[in-house]
Image 1 (cartoon, rainbow, N blue to C red):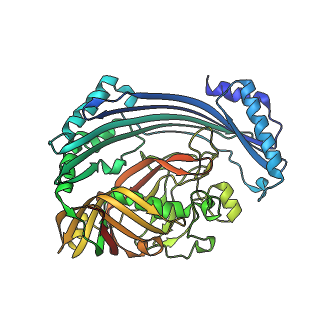
Image 2: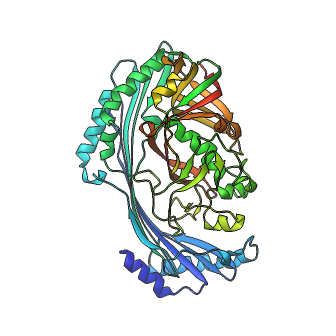
Image 3: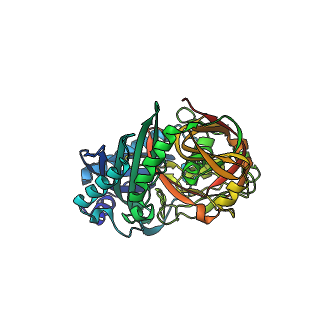
Length: 479
């Protein structure tokens, strides 16, 4: 059924409410993997559904259904209207004060060579070839190569004229090798499973997917043979594939405005950030510049409009270290009387949009990787997240990485295994000492950022240069 036919069905119903909006979502997905040289059963999926939201008599309500027949859509609108009537009795804010979108436009992921155009035979061949390269040594005891591909076609329209079409293609290639030597097992992956983008198969060449397989297996063996990471206060150099997690957990989640307002308290926690901090709080050193940027080409959570039709743009959340604005969509902005961003996002057709980070990036500085290393007398260089823990207010954290390497007298020296570090968000970012230039920037993503009741796992992107922090508590994991 075409988009126009579904729109015609909704308009023909002429819902008797003050305002209505509809979001139609059609998703496809495919997963292929080769483990220890064996092709696992392929997975393919398809789903389509419709989400309706209404504002009526001072309340708001929503409903969702996979039934896109006239009767199915009518039933969804009736449920949404009933919920709006009930909600009006207990409302915490005036739903009529929020400006609804009238935007019209379209967006398509910037794909050069679509994964869907490659034959199944070719896809499997690439995985088998990379898996073979992962098994470079008898000490490699487990090895895994996989592709995850999905598309999402979305149409948002409402009763005041908005009409938005967005077509997305997502590609997530992964490699993993586990080595066992001298009683130790260690795993190395492709950027901590973080190579997720809006892209086609051209990304395989960009990241040297085939060439990376041999490097990953060699690094897994090196880790298994390495000494445990020492403990103490060190300078800490984080690669972009670890900066991804650092930004995500200790900046992204604390700045979500619904969390700041208390909406997530019973499930995903609160935030150490309070509304009065914006415009004056020193979140980090003057080198810290964080942007919300769904307009960045090819990043995993890029889009032109959020899921309530708000046009997206690049916005500084933290500028020269000062906290400027939260991650809040139009509803949260109205509730808190704070400026926000276009980040009302839903994971699928059967979930309501809530405040979510999208592409959250750390802007490049002016230091080369070589200069940052040369300026460290006693430090550790860490890559690729492997474990994380952070408190309910998103303040105190502890992260573990796959790869560690000592920096001694301005030079990279011994590889160390089980590297970990910990800190407090409110002070850790103030110890940001140097920020890498554009040549050090890496762009990564994750498909599984969870939040909300009912739970929603959304795609999030992070781009960052390598960054150097001073005086960090570093420690080794269990041997």
